[in-house]
Structures are given as C-alpha cells and as structure tokens.
Image (cartoon, rainbow, N blue to C red):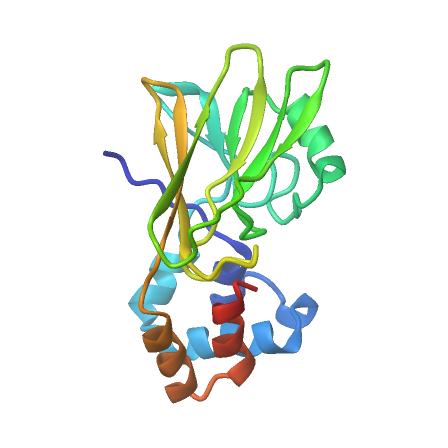
Length: 200
C-alpha cells in the first residue's frame, strides 16, 4: 500500500501558507490553535506537503486533488460545479476532498449524474460500492474522517481497488464524545464540538 498525502486549505492556513482572513471566524481560530500547538518540526512537515493534481506512477488514469483539477481550493458541491472539471480533466478518475461530502459525480458525455450514497444504518459500519466503468469520467470524494458535513456524524472514507476498478464508500462510528470532550478541553469554540454530532 502506498500512502499519498496532499495539502488542504486548513493545512495551508495552519502553516501560514494561506491567509485566514477568508475563513469564517471559528475556522480561523481553529487554524491558529493548530499553528500554536504543532511543533516546529510538525509545521515544517505540514508545510512541505505537495499540492494536487498528483498522480501515482502505476495509475496513469487516476489523479488526486484537494479541491478540483481546475483549482485546489474550488468547492465541488453541485453538479454544476463539477461539470467543467469532469469534462476538462486530463484523466477519467479524479479523487478530491475539500467539501467533506462523501460521493461524487460522473459523466459519459451524454449524461451527467450526481452520485451520493444514501446511508440508513446510522451508528453502525456501512459500505456502498461504486464500480468504475469504461468510458465514464468520475470525480470521487472519499469523505471526511474528522468532520463529515453531510448530516452523518460517522467517519467517512473510501477504499479504491485499482485492479477491480471498484470504489467502496465506507462509514464507521468513532468515539464522538471523546472527540467533543477534547475540543472543549482545548478551549476551542463549543460550536466545533457540537457540529460533529450533527455531521456538519
């Protein structure tokens, strides 16, 4: 297994590579708290993370980005947002993040779809499969382990089997109260703890 890490907007904000004046006040406070609590070595490591788009040698038709292939800080929330990146991307499969919304978008040039898994078993482990088809272009968001924003508090991630051409979206519960207690103990805004339970 190969580990690939990309820099995100909060990484850049915490390390001073991005101006936090565009962040909402609570997110800005969290970025400053992170900056103040990381060691110089950790900050240096975080600052050195690469930016997307990024590819892995043995996967020439797959790329990884934070926001979109067009702009690493672009939010792909709606089908309209996704249309240009879907049609202009240099590869058929793009994994992205930034929105914290698990799912994604696909097009075969004759129709375009919004693929968002719908979960029903809140509180338990759950998976949904997305087989990748030839001739279809995908923008896939694995979700967020730390702060899902789709109304489901469980950690969200995805597994990609490049041989089987299969993406498996996963949800799993975690120690929500423990995470909330640590946020409060760090004197961070209560809203950051509360929103975890709402998946927002």
